[in-house]
Image 1: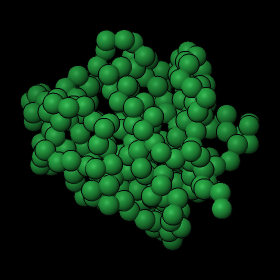
Image 2 (image 1 turned 90 degrees about the vertical axis):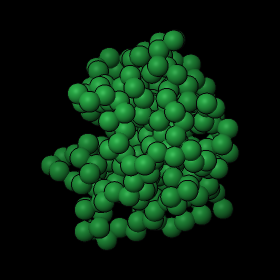
Image 3 (image 1 turned 120 degrees about the vertical axis):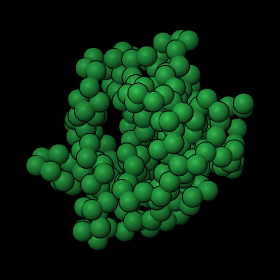
Image 4 (image 1 turned 60 degrees about the vertical axis):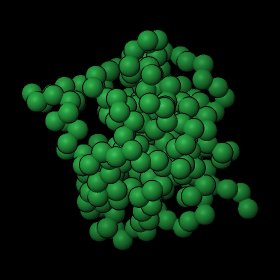
Length: 231
């Protein structure tokens, strides 16, 4: 039996390919996790402002707009024009770290949605991990390809709508089959770093910013071993 196919969509921040930047360091972690995947049937669609040579598994769409929303529209248009179909699709930011074993987990399941109930965060400055149970689905949720193109608001397909905090309501109302990743085996890690725009918005500094994500611990997640940098 043929294993299930997965498509990762990433909108690339311009600084992610600038050597020496913190964003480039995070993008290299993103790539390292993808290179560690021991599962053959997946592709990566990256929307960037110029062509990149990342290997045969990657398809690069060139788009010079700086908006994530507009770049995601380009990815949607590409899929509609090429009529490529996968079993599952997921969005992954270029500073996130995907669980290298997660496709193997989903391949053996029957579900419409596979997501994290416990959202997991990695502080790049300390190497510590925090996890919080939240009542909404994160941006990086693995979704069946058919479900991804369902309407949520107006003409915005579900997967391509940035209101991901409403995804869980829609899916529960539609009685979709939802399965959650183990707390010790999350779909991905959201990386936090002191140089990010989000972390600098508050007036109380990075340490205060980190407190909103729960308790930070030196916790090892086995599936991410070999991907995370040592401290």
